[in-house]
Length: 155
Image 1 (tube, rainbow, N blue to C red):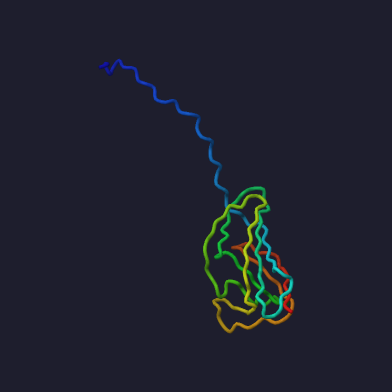
Image 2 (cartoon, helix red, strand yellow):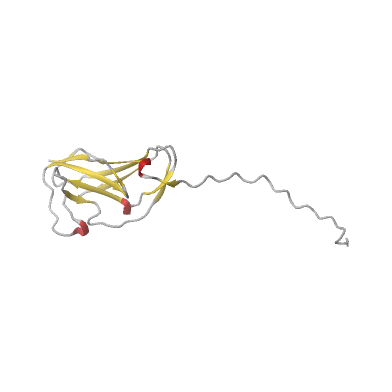
């Protein structure tokens, strides 16, 4: 056996070039990086029909970012001509799930809500009545991001 004091150490394997650094995870999307629109699938519905309303989110920035797109953060509201709130998608169906998603530059995500055509109040309080014919405004919300108003007509 070799004398440990005079033995030459066997070099270990030379480290390979280190793997490329992983890019940093995307940061949360600020409201300014996103555009939110709410659109009825048709411009007019008959009273008694159940309008389908689409929330469309788009990353208008040049960087990928993360936003929770879960149902807990989505809301569609209906207002009459005097800005009186008539209905919210969250009044009778609060809560929902979380769903963090990475949105690359220009990426879009959309969600549909079917409205019963009835009015509502927070916590589904009070009597729900059929909303009559006329012109109304929709507003979409995703967390703190609020859309511009979009018209819908009931005939």
